[in-house]
Amino acid sequence: MEPHALVEQRGPILIVTMNRPQVRNALSAEMMAIMRDAWDRVDGDPEIRAAVLTGAGGAFCAGADLRAMTQSHPGDTFDGADLSRIDALLKGRRLTKPLVAAVEGPAVAGGTEILQATDVRVAGASARFAVSEARWGLFPLGGSAVRLVRQIPYTIAVEMLTTGRQLSAAEAREAGLIGHVVPDGQALTKALELAGAIAANGPLAVQAILRTIRETEGLPENDAFAVESKIGMAVFRSEDAKEGPRAFIEKRPPEFRGR
Ligand SMILES: C[C@H]([C@H](O)CC(=O)SCCNC(=O)CCNC(=O)[C@H](O)C(C)(C)COP(=O)(O)OP(=O)(O)OC[C@H]1O[C@@H](n2cnc3c(N)ncnc32)[C@H](O)[C@@H]1OP(=O)(O)O)[C@H]1CC[C@H]2[C@@H]3CCC4=CC(=O)CC[C@]4(C)[C@H]3CC[C@]12C
Image (cartoon, rainbow, N blue to C red; front, side, top):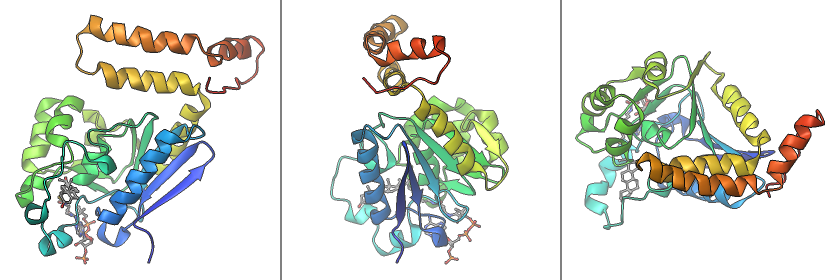
């Protein structure tokens, strides 16, 4: 039996592949455990500078396993755990390094929910996006009722959440849910190209930029600048911030050490 998610390190990039293609990579407890461990690895390993999340077999993810739900329903088995944080889906927890999504085929329900926790998003032309929980009388507990309206225009978010309608890749890009549409089958290649560009940059700078974005979300502008200037000045004091300008003047690629 294949593991429900595959984790592969390629140089400074960790690639996480949801791997239950026969059910369009519907989430399982095993898959979620592997994903949670992979996110710990991304945050804990200084050699990893970016991560990519994708799905096997031409699908991204079809959300929770509805068949499993007919056998053991979370509504009946729920043990009262705090669902304001679901590590595997990066709800209530964000990575310290950029996460790039490579979507082919359906990203539905939990699939579009975890997409909202990624930082840079690429999709094949036939990809489709939906938050379909309400169609089955369920609630999008992966965070979409909070996060989607913060990421895309209100009316499109509410329409997606309440009708469950699928957006095409072109519609998703127009709404700003994804950044790039590429020919089918090319999403991972493009995502790796973007992750590579991120990984080549100063890791302290990249992580500080992400941290600033995360920590200032929703703050009044001047409060946000107070946070930003503290985080940013620490980067300016680093060795990497001296290496970058030197490399420019010496006409060579910078060699960042992350300190
Ligand atoms: C709350 C989150 C999460 O947000 C909830 C959900 O995600 S609900 C899931 C809703 N999913 C859908 O609506 C998608 C259904 N599928 C489709 O619409 C289509 O299949 C498709 C568009 C994806 C693809 O269409 P295709 O035409 O290409 O393919 P199709 O022929 O239809 O399918 C091929 C075969 O694949 C099977 N398939 C597809 N999707 C699924 C699916 N989702 N489940 C099962 N099987 C699927 C299909 O049947 C075909 O197979 P055949 O054999 O050929 O028929 C929740 C996410 C995780 C939850 C937490 C989990 C852990 C917890 C445990 C607890 O006890 C407490 C709670 C919790 C923390 C729990 C809380 C909620 C979540 C966070």
